[in-house]
Length: 201
Image (cartoon, rainbow, N blue to C red; front, side, top):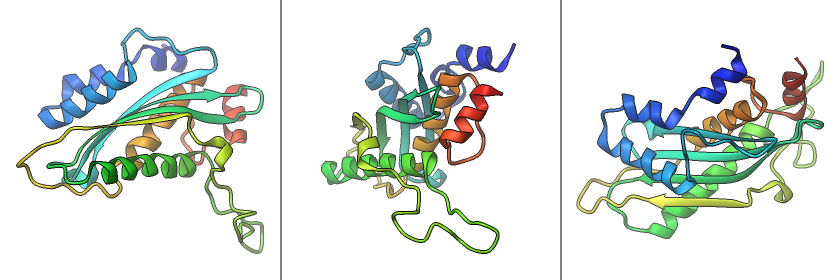
């Protein structure tokens, strides 16, 4: 099976549901998949890809799963996160707006890391010296939609959620890019050049 077929025929949601034993992890994955409308036989629109990822922050804090829809311009290599749907379990809920804001911000920040950010340099020095020369997400590239579902656990311990979404967001975006172009790009950030090179390889 070639890499394109392997990506197309793998359902990461079903895989995780079959292999995880932690009920709270399973519920977070199911909620993110349900919110996204994930289906094992779904086909994204042309030049789009769907990705999914899950992690438990530091293996002992909040649970977070994220599904992503990205659009890839095959001519320029530009990747755009169109939509992200997250589910999070941070224990007993105290401030829902705060938690939603935290997850939304984490997705945007992780998108910037994943698609743009890196220190640039030449043979003698660093060349990314300010906000004009450092590659970072701009307002015209923010997602059209970020949706956060919270699973409240009254009476259960509070779980830290400070950076719970960064890891799953990056993995979900990278998985969506692989789904869109049929090849796995393993170096970050997923720049236009790297995407074009992968498409043309």
